[in-house]
Image 1 (cartoon, one colour):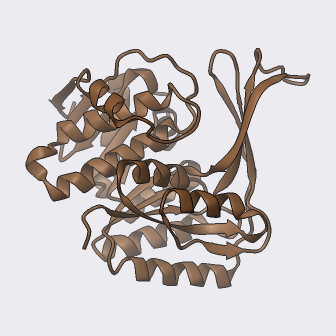
Image 2: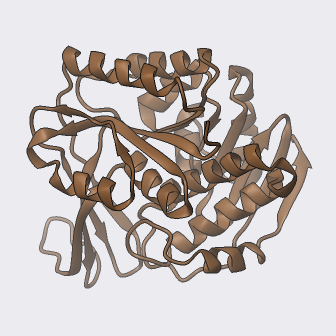
Length: 322
């Protein structure tokens, strides 16, 4: 079994239409776009692209609208990913991301395709097959119509029962339900963590205390991303923190997905060579990868040397639970 094999699951992919505004977003009025891109996305698809750029053997699956699948097929071919997506009738949604001159992103996300029982059964059969020779599964993003949080939870628990490591990155009801199905790693940002526990979080200590309330659910790794404040990782009662230097932000689109990919890549390498990939290295690499992601438009690793150079500037700090 290849140690660097990974499955990314995108249940609700999207074509991302990203528009960079000449000024600020004028709500209720006209906003002018200075440049734009349209490309295949969805959190799991973004993770797959980054992992492929790093050198992983990636298989992609989920649900894809048959009517406009060409751009996805082309991407999967370009990144040498094995395409195991289940095709469903209709078109994959288009999500709109508007980036203003301060690099603030306004997302307009559409609901996605309708998934029927036949497609669900085909997906479950695919998951069972992939579980035979894969240990890592990244399930990322929102749920399309026809997929309930409870069904998503069932899939995570099924993979857990098979001894698989599920990296689960979602939000709202899907994340809340999925917490009870023993995902191996979750990566809420500070806003998602606040929503999860139902109270505002004003400091790093607040975020740590909130994350620690989730430990009892049997989640091995709880990673909290806090934007420019860095990344915190709770594992076996120990906190590890990393903070990148100040970066020139071009776009934050895909930075969280890049962090997930970096954490996954670090663990794939750790399985292969634990002495050379201690926890500190896994976190500093993932943090550097994510920090560089905000300096570019589009998701992907264009220069691994820049990642390694930035990684040398990132200090990790360990402390016990508070």
